[in-house]
Image 1 (cartoon, one colour):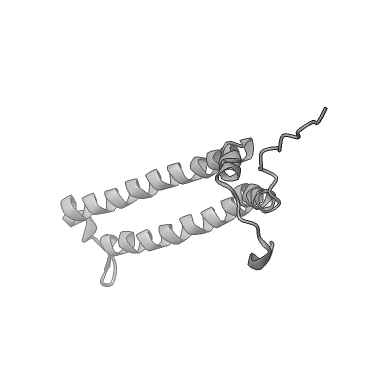
Image 2: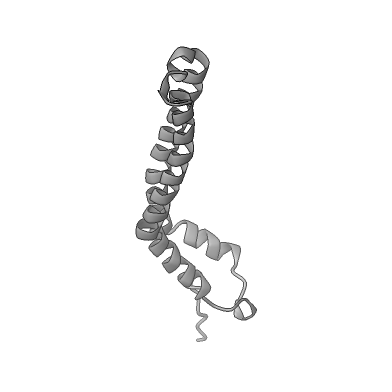
Length: 123
């Protein structure tokens, strides 16, 4: 990575070229393919927990062992699932999206997304 003091500012056109590139399209596709299903799954799991807590009081208060009931275990499961999704995302990003993002960053820093300059010919 180029030290900040040695960087040239990128133009809006360079950002637009990078955004319109096939690499960026693939990066977005890979991110969305992971993020959307995980978000839906987690929200469904959370909504199920809230609905059970609200409408299935007897089920949620079922003792599992000692003073621990199903509601407490499912509540702790919310934390566990959050950490699990985080770990899955870190692994997904490291394998699937970070390599593309790193390559695009290097190309941006090298101004490889700049539009080619037209050369004037003198006759």
